[in-house]
Structures are given as C-alpha cells and as structure tokens.
Image (tube, rainbow, N blue to C red; front, side, top):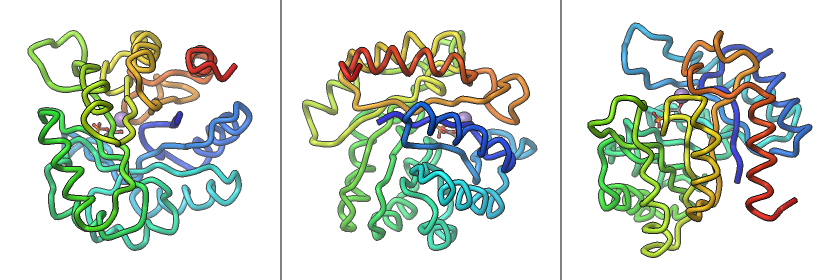
Length: 238
Ligand code: PEP
Ligand code: MN
C-alpha cells in the first residue's frame, strides 16, 4: 500500500496536479490533510470543510482512494462520504473518545503511533477502535521522540517485526515524519520495506519549498517516482 500526497490540502490545483501524477504512475491512494494538527496554533490549520470538498471533487474525478486526518468526532459524519481511510494522527492516538467514535464506523482506519507511545500503548489504542466493532485498522509508524535532534523524530523500525509477530494487523511506515528530512526519506523507505512493512505513506509536493506545511520533508514528483520504482523492485512487483 503506497499512499502519497501533500501534507496539507492547500488548494484544488495542488490536489489535481498530484492526483494526475499519481494516477499516471499507478498509485491508488492519495493523502492530504484538511484538518491539520499543528504544533503552533499560529500555523496554518488546514482548509477544513473546504479541504474536504476539494478531496471530494478529486476523488470523483480520479477514483483515487482518499486518506485524510480527522481530529474531531464532530467532523466524522460529513467526512465519511469522502474519506476512504480515516487517519488518526500521532497527537490523537490517546484520544480514546475519538478512537471509540471511529470504531463505530465501518471505515478503514490508519492509526498513527503517538510520538511518545510505547508499542503496547499503541496496540491498546487499536483495541479501543476494534472493541467498538471496527477491526479494519492499519497501524502507521511515524517516528518517536528521542534525545536525537538531528532528525525530527526517530523512526522506530523495531516495531514493524514486533507488530507482525504479535498481531494480525497491517503496518505501514511514514518516513517523511519519521525523519523530517527529505534527503533521508528514500533510505528509510527502503529500510521499512526490508523490515517487513506492508506499505508507506509519503509526503510529496510539486514544489516542496513552497509547501504550506512540511515542505522540508516532502519529495518532489521526480524524487517520489524514483523511490516508488525502487520500492516496487524490493516488493518484487517489477
Ligand atoms: C501528517 O500526516 O501530516 C501528520 C500530521 O502526521 P503525524 O500525526 O504523524 O504528525
Ligand atoms: Mn505533515
């Protein structure tokens, strides 16, 4: 499962360009945040409902599956028609009320690991969703906070074989947030797959330096294409 797209839904044109590019490559999942959980309340918070409307239009035009974050259970109902995979972000992994609400839906859920969560806490968060009746859950390792500051987070690839050995859940890796540095994304993408991950979620942007969020960790289209082909080779798909 390869998911790609910009950190934030910035405008229709960005999503349209990205969707056309991914469709051409054969990628089936498009990411893009409409509701953005930013560290600073003064940073861009996402286009919210307008962003969901853009994703709806793109989904209808290209038939791509949409992966997008929901931060508030009150936004769930209107998003269910548009979002194919509901992303629960790192900051909300401990939001048990939200987890339970998502568990009452029949949507696939991408549960990101809390940035300071142990593997056990993360698996318990998945249980909160599953106990409500929805066990269509994909885990996503997105890096944890350690003493290291060179990288934004420390990608904990140990968790990939652990999850495989302890659970029947799928696990994908997010090397964009896991490293916070675009020059490290390719190496860590390949490492993730070698460790047994079922896929990747990658931030891409036609002009990363102009992205409204997370440009420093986003690949441009050409860089993504290169990573994508190497990933397919590792999976023995080409
Ligand atoms: C994101 O995917 O853009 C995001 C905010 O991720 P995380 O919740 O892992 O920080
Ligand atoms: Mn991001």
